[in-house]
Length: 364
Image (cartoon, rainbow, N blue to C red):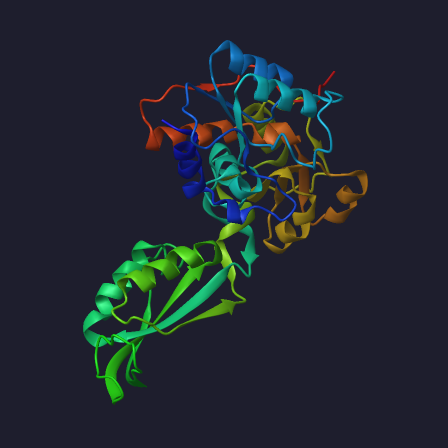
C-alpha cells in the first residue's frame, strides 16, 4: 500500500479543490510512492503526535489541521511547527491534512456534528457559489446514449440526490471535412448535414478536466464541439456549516447541557437565553462567527460553533442563541471520518487514533 492510494481515497470523499483559498490541505511531507507501515489519525500535529507515530511505527499521519499552514522560510527548530517538520522528515513520516475541504462536504465535519446532536433534515448552511459549470456538447443521435453514460461515469450530471441528469435537444449540424481529416461521417470537401443531439450536463469545476477527457475519449468525432459555461448557481451539496431539526423541541438549558456532555466541553460560552425551546439548530465546526447571519437567516434557534470574539456575541441581538463550544471540541470527531473513509477503501489496514490530547485550551 502506498501513500497515493490513501490520498486518493480521502480526496474522492473531500476533493482538495473544495478547500478555501487560504488553506493548505493535502500531502505536506513525504513521497506519494512511499509504502505505508501504519497510519495515525489526529486533529492537530504536535511533537507528541509525531513521537506517538514513531512509537507505533506509523509512517503516515493524517490530520485535520495542516501542520504547514503559513509559508516556512527556515527550518531551525525555533517553533513547534519547524520541530515537527524536522522530526517527521528525519523519521521518514509523511504528513497529510484534510481541512476546509473536509468542512465543505455534506458528510464531513459539520455533517458529523449534526449526527452527534441527532439533527434530521440537514442542509448546508452557506452553500458554495461559482463551483458549477454547464457542459454543452453535440453528438450523432445513435451515439448520444453512449456519450451520456461516459459523462455520467466521469462525475457529470449530479443535481442534489439525483444523478444521470441531462437535458437533450435534437437538431442537426453542418460541417465540411478538409484535407487530412478522418471524418466519422461525411466525405472530404463535401458539406455534410448530420442529425445530432445537443447534450447539457452540470459538472463541478474540480471535475472539469476529468469530464472533458471522458467526452473526447467517448465521442465518435475526431474534433467534437463542446462549450463550458460558468454557472452562478449555489451548490447546495457543498459549503460551510449545516442546519437541521431536532426530533423534539428541547428547553435551552437542557440542550446546552446535552451539548456539553456530547462534546466533552469544559465550559460553553453563550449569548443570553431567549426563554424559547430549541428546534432548529445551526452548526459549524471550528471558527464559525462569519456564518452567524446565515444561521439567523436560516431561522435557527441556536448556533453551535466556536471562536466567537467578544463583539461577535453582540451580533445575535436576541434573534438566536450563540453557543461557543470550543474549536477543538467542535472538530474532535473528524478522526472518525478519516477512519471510516480509509476502512471503506482498505478494510484490513492498520489505522490508529492518536492518544494524546492536542487541545491547547484548558479549563480550570
